[in-house]
Image (tube, rainbow, N blue to C red; front, side, top):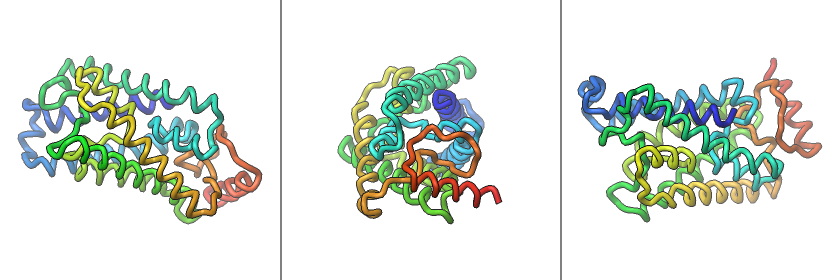
Length: 260
């Protein structure tokens, strides 16, 4: 399921990047301003993110589709070692397949120099700014996931918070780093585009940013961990993640409220 979610995410990324950036695309000619095209990309991808998290697959797997998110939840003790070991390979494989399918379906159009399979590379301000930007937006994303999903009145809206953040980041942060927050997303595009420039940034910065978010969360809650590693709790899908007894009771209470 995680592999499938990443495949959908990366296929959508390539499709939308081609529609908005390819020189032969009528959308690019109709929307000439870079900021406007990024806003459209952000709105579309944010919507897709919400749909993936709310899908049956997202409800079952937790809707991570990001190795850095999975690692952060493992740091919080919510994943068994076996799951933490197998999630990332599935995520990387799904992302790679998604880009490959986009290349085939779109007949190579995502490989155009204006699209380049949606590669993420440092912007005009260089690697240091790109690293700080990736770490910062990853920190904000994971902090939001943890605090929103662990408030009873807000938990059901976690997918929408995540989608909104993606939309904002794609619109405004893209010029700094390309807006990744996801090692699998960056590697999949880099592999097809044969573009390896500053790849290390997109592995290290998102992971550090999200790990920092877990420490802030634990400090703010007196070392009390999150309820669950799912991004969407308002469903009846079996949960594969770890819960202590008090957490399990809380989640059961949440689910009863959500079903009303």
